[in-house]
Amino acid sequence: MSTPTDIDIDIEGAVAPVDDGPLTVSITRRVAPQDELLMQAWVHAGTSMAERFEGFLGAGWVRSGSEDWHMLYRFDSREHLDAWERSPERIRWLRSAADLVEHRRTEYRTGIEGWFDEPATRDIRDLRLAPAAPPRYKQAVVIWLAFFPLSLLTSWVTGRFVPDLPIVERVFLTTVVMTPIMTYLVLPRMTRALGWWLAGRAAPWRRTATA
Image (cartoon, rainbow, N blue to C red; front, side, top):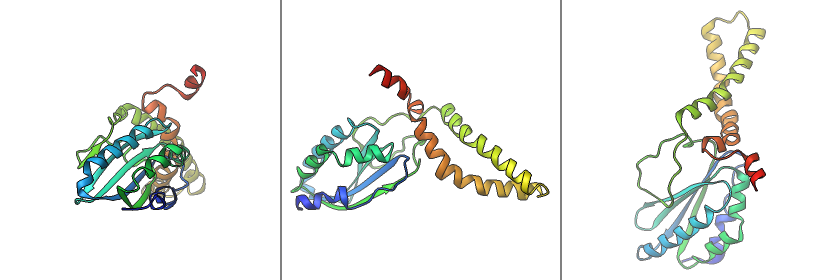
């Protein structure tokens, strides 16, 4: 259905964002209906390889129609995603399906969307056991650690430069400033820095010492 060059579009056809937070990749591939079992085996093989790479957070796929497969995988950083996408293992895996799949589209999504979400019931077949969502108290701690210093800073700024601003306007101004900063700057970095703790893994410096 396609040539090896077409398959390599997965690596070079879309550019991952520069953001250093978690990245989800959505790839649409077209497969002949009669090749469904071969496709499932191929996807399982790719996921088995990807989960051996550092930073892998999960993978799955969803069907739309009889031919289009939307394949998803997620890494905790751009660096770890690049290591997987440019690895010899992945390149060989892609080329092994040159006569099986046709690449259609690649999309990258950034931020922390879905990081705290409970597993949802969708028409998605997970290819590995999904990690449990972090305990709610850990979610609350991360949010507080991001919120407290930012709230303190904005309160100091508004108190210094607009001390006579009525409370309604002051709260409105504070929330308008804080919300995008929390969503796009502070929380992504906090969740990445504390990802080991959220997931219940050993601290990085302990893993390094053990190794």
